[in-house]
Length: 50
Image (cartoon, rainbow, N blue to C red):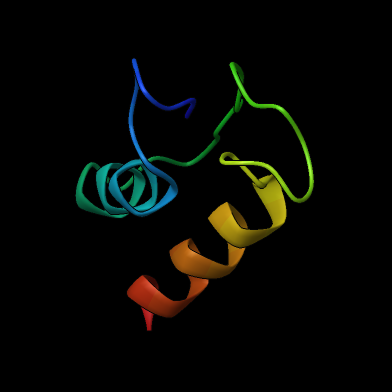
């Protein structure tokens, strides 16, 4: 997760849910308030899992 060269937060969350990944190690992120907020990533995964 790190634009412009990698996935968006939403795309990364979709991939995790689609592949039914048990563990995720986010890297290439710049932290809260930036383009790759890990908290938003976690929230997106939770919403998509239902």
